[in-house]
Each structure stands twice: as structure tokens, then as C-alpha cells.
Image (cartoon, rainbow, N blue to C red; front, side, top):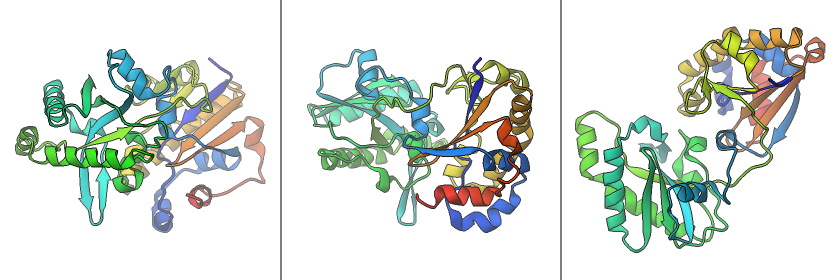
Length: 325
């Protein structure tokens, strides 16, 4: 265990400031607000997915995954995540791939049909049920893209891949959407009340050495880190704690669930942090709040708790974070 604890809390800051006057009245978080208002704040140019994919051994994550499955016959590679796009007025909102609950058989059939359609142009390979690898001979050296995790609930059109091959990539994505529209698997899923697989999201990520070393990570999300069994004990045996209960409600603008998740931090997590600081379990706490295009770090020590002249409410703190987005 380190003398410093990292706490990653995605989704804690509601990004639509116009909602603050009514939304923040529902929060009951005096301890959490006190902790943040007395901390030293710094901004960093990495985002949530950089905490989730911190160790990339190849040039990019897509090349790493391709290498792991022996996929080496193309010039370039991308991660291709199946997703569901939903029309909302003039926007296409994007959903995380996990919500689809894709089976291996479904994934393999869709991959086969897409490969047949694009034979000789691109090729998909299965990596796991909800994450595939695309090989192509396009020039992707200047690719800029967002992981699906970072744009959940957002307008997909604003985060499409850009670079020299962007038009071709967008064309391929559009063709795949048309191919999936009447796909037999989606017809069956609709009959069974399941979310349809109506798009693939292309992205890639390079190694980011600016993210903190998370060491031993525990999380409420068992996919991300070691599962939490007893937080009151586990928190003293780890280097980093990741709680994402507010993330999906915030991304999908579910204000009721978001308020519940943030208020739960106040009663279940923040008292443990304050007690740990006061009893010298850690010399420093670093609270990381990822936003859509940057992350804020709030660093606090035991002595920081006694800076009585620093005091802001959570609405003021949040507004200061999102005003430049």
C-alpha cells in the first residue's frame, strides 16, 4: 500500500451548467464539498479512458490487440466496438457496447457478414464479444479518435474519427450501419426486446505516460479492477479506488440516478477518506475527476483539512470546471 491514495470518480461533475440551479439542490454532500474546496486543483490533458487503458505495449492499442490474436496482414488497425445509435431530435446518441449483451455467436456472424460485404477492402477479427479489431490499408498515422467509453450518451457526429482517411472511415461506418439495419440478428433481437446492434464505432489509443501510476486498483466495476468486497477494509489495502456509479447516469442525463450515486459517495466513501487522512493512513489523497476532454486532480493532505479560509459549494466548484469545456 502506498502513502498516497488515488480516487478516480468519473461522472461526478454534471456537464450541463444550465441544470445546476435545480439539480444541485438535491445533493447532500457537505463532507465531499469540504474535501474538494480545500484541495490543490490542477488540470491534465488526459481523459477517463486513459485510466482504463493505461498500459499499451505496442504503438497503439489496436495494434496491441491485433498482435495478441495474430492479426498481422494489414498496414493499419482500429478497434471496432459494436454499439447502438439512437436518434434524439437532430442528434445520434451513442451507447456503450456492454448494454447490447452480444453473444459470441452473434459477434461471429456479424463479423462474417461485414467481411463478406467489404471483401478485399477491410477485415474484422473477433477479440471478444463486444470488442473487435479492424484491419485495413488506410493511412491512419494522423488519426484522432475517441474511445466509445468517452463518448457514451453524446452526439456521435461530434466525435467521429478525423485525419487524412476520415472520409473513407466515415463511408465505411455508414455502409456498416446500412448493412446492420435489416440484419437477421437485429430482427431477432427486436422480437426478443433486445437492443439492436446498428453501428460500429472505430477508435484507437496511443500510450499516455502522463496518467498516474494506479498500482493496485479496486473498483465497484469488476471489469476495470479488483472487485470491492468490503470497502471499509479494502480501501486501506490498495493504491487506487475507482467508483463509476455516477458515470453512466451522468452520460445518459439520468439526473435522478446521478444524484443518488453522488449522495452515496458522501455516506460510504468520503468518511473513510477523511478518517484515513486524519489517522495518517495516507499522507496524500488525489481525487481525479475526468471530464470529456480533460481531467482535474484535487490533491489534499491532512493539513489541508484545516484550511478554513477555503470554502466553496459544490455548484461553484463544478461550474469552475465546466466553464471552459
